[in-house]
Image 1: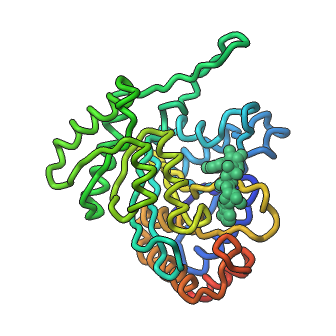
Image 2: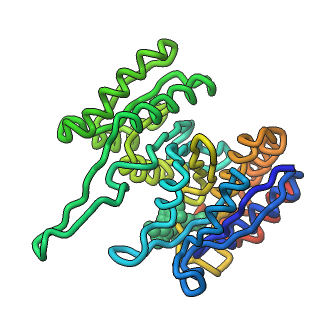
Length: 331
Ligand code: NAD
């Protein structure tokens, strides 16, 4: 039995994580949940959206899965997600972008993986005002962080029979920071002769991903580009309701969907829980419960192929509950 910390989160978080728990239960996953709350509602009680006992619970169990957490725009508390990634040194953000065969989509056969650096770049949170005139944010890129993220990307490619790693950057303009990222990527690539390597400037990457997404395999990039391109890629395969993610460090792993708390549809039983269910599939593989993971993926594929119980984001009319029941039935 694996003990896992579960953080339901804000907005649609409680709805989609409850759906995920139900699916894992029916699939026979061997998991004991320890539920802890983080997010907006905790501020009144603890004075922070991320109380210390939440971090302690993740440290104790080493594995967590979370719903999205709201971050105020332009003011208020620092992102809980960024704080967790930095505090637990979850330096990898792994986001597989794969189209479900059963879904009728604009693109077919998309199967790429975004490996996003998760601890530095403009997300380091080093910013200050320049009087009333302006503001400055520092883009921090360090050699050790570049080395470990690119090494992870190559190691992942090797272990998962992927043939190419593409480093995404803007080293033509940010010659020192992105230049260091690219130089380091080239150095690390030397250690992996059996995996192809190329690089791509981020604006060209945005266009090429929309034109020919099937050409890409593993893509490794600094934090900000990874954030933006993973949302773009989610759009290629049906939207944010589908794309899972894993924040991985040396000691801990926190699984979560790419999407946010979607406040417009929160509490309406409309959210698509696939992204968090797929995040749980990644978690089950991490826990070596591969058979249960495969079973859940097949059940999702079956529901999409039948096409009768799709949520609103995928053009259907099913509620979160009806979709979850269909997946459980397919199991
Ligand atoms: P969002 O991902 O919440 O929503 C973007 C769009 O996708 C909306 O139209 C939303 O309705 C739709 N959507 C997202 N998930 C869906 C799902 N499961 N099913 C159906 N439709 C879905 O992004 P946003 O609106 O930019 O952000 C809302 C809040 O979430 C912000 O406070 C932001 O900071 C936060 N956020 C948190 C995380 C996280 O916790 N990891 C990630 C991204 C954004």
